[in-house]
Length: 56
Image 1 (spheres, rainbow, N blue to C red):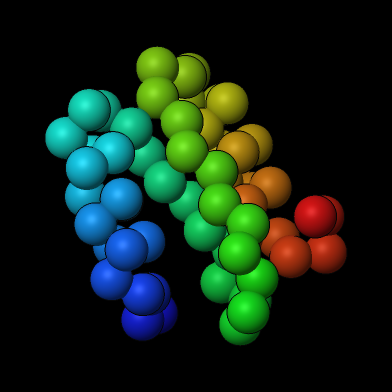
Image 2 (cartoon, helix red, strand yellow; image 1 turned 90 degrees about the horizontal axis):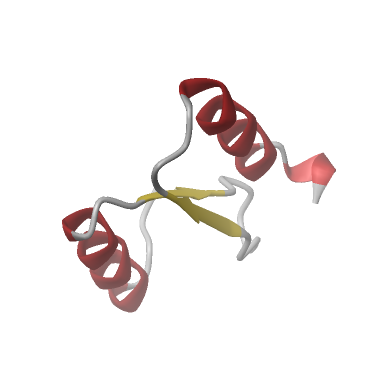
């Protein structure tokens, strides 16, 4: 998925601070979820929410 440069830079900076960013893969959808310090179960729920376009 090709993202605009500002989004890629923001995601890279977030990785440096220990954050993960999940984005909706639906074309034109701007929903993203950024998290850190969550349990594996919470990470799965957040990933599911971010990638399921019908839920947001």
